[in-house]
Image 1: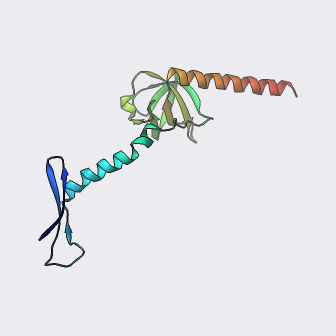
Image 2: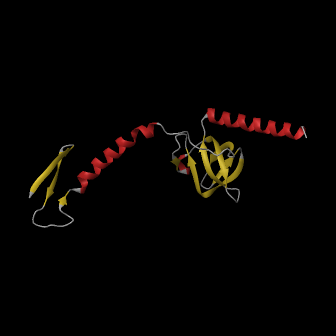
Image 3: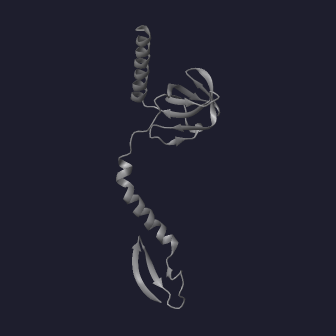
Length: 152
């Protein structure tokens, strides 16, 4: 057996060897447990700058806003009125990470979209600034629509 290269991963040495007795596709013997951490480190390092420059989350323009309080899934209240979440409802927090409904407690300011049966299927938990910006945009759109209707 001939040693080709030695790589050090943490406290372990990864040795690449070639078996001279068996010519086959499996000539290089590499312990897979030692390769996976190296591959993971390389992949993370290669994509680190992209992770830091993530774009803002994309919430549809036609998403409604409100204040949601979750009960026992699928029941909830939206602005004090009972509503239901859809079976595959996705709740995203302010970091755009999907949350399990049972972990979301208290009243949350949200943007949401409804499914075909009126159930809530997408929820984005908003910061106070995001909620205010969306509320202001909705008020401005309503004013513009009202003024456009009066000019005819």
